[in-house]
Amino acid sequence: MRRTLPLLAMLVGTLIATHSMTASAAEYPLPPDNSRLIGENTTYTVPNDGLPLEAVAAKYQIGLIGMLEANPGTDPYLPKPGTVLTIPSQMLLPDTKREGIVVNLAELRLYYYPKGENKVIVLPIGIGQLGRNTPEMVTSVSQKIPNPTWTPTANIRKAYLKDGITLPGMVPAGPQNPMGLFTMRLSAGTGQYLIHGTNANFGIGMRVSSGCIRLRPDDIEALFNMVPKGTRVQIVNQPIKFDVEPDGKRYIEVHQPLSHTEKDDPQTKPIPLTVAAKKFVKNNETDDDVVKQAIERRSGMPVVVSKGVEAKSATAASQTAVTTIQKTYETADNQ
Image (cartoon, rainbow, N blue to C red):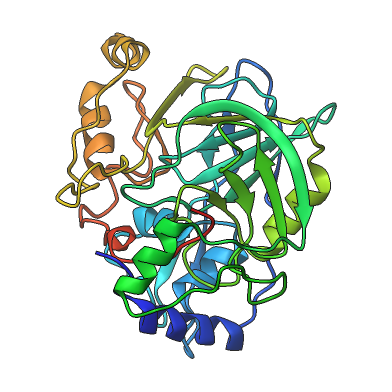
């Protein structure tokens, strides 16, 4: 379903503009090589005058779907005043090389490992919508473009025309450009995949783009200024992350898998286990019942699954399904 929420998106954008909140840097100390657990979860109480969920998500550098995974049943637009929201700021690093930019599509997050620095920067992203998927790949930043123009492809113009919207052949640089003010081109393919900003206040942490990777304006500006040309970029799809920490605790973190068809429900869609994940689950030190609960719940937060240790996050949380609004809100970028 395409662009079925434009009025709601405009409403949320207006509400966010009138409820300004300053975002803090999503920077974490890099753990040792034998550890992948970073951050701590926290809570936020919605004020009496209300606050859009997107504004809360932006303040804490979380994506919208990430907030909904952690807080099932929450109104995706205006949470009830007094609601205590879980801020999912604890996570396991993806099982990848700690170099350059790493994007995990399933969790809708971008990780940046600055060269020579003992830290990792984590930012929420928007990725390709159903049918215009962002591909898994290893590539690099080939070009950095400040103040980009946007040239809609024939396919995008055709799609908009079906909705009665005629797009210009080229949108000039500026605050109204859907590409935002900063763009980094990837070397893969013909250079059609970009990491860029947006002119909207809604959609980060969702499947909203035409294949590119989209960030909030402040985030893309910060990333643009940090990332040198030639930086390695690895894009993976890891809905299930797991690790054994140095203290012996065993963790699993489960996100909703990416939909492949309109009929897929990310909350119930089966998630195939990799060979390594199966080995982790079958280990005598792993409580497979808690693992099953975590996979069913899909909270997007690390859960302790060690035998004899009380599980965190998964067992105490509601089983209410997350509202899958990523299926119903789509906007276009460069494809």
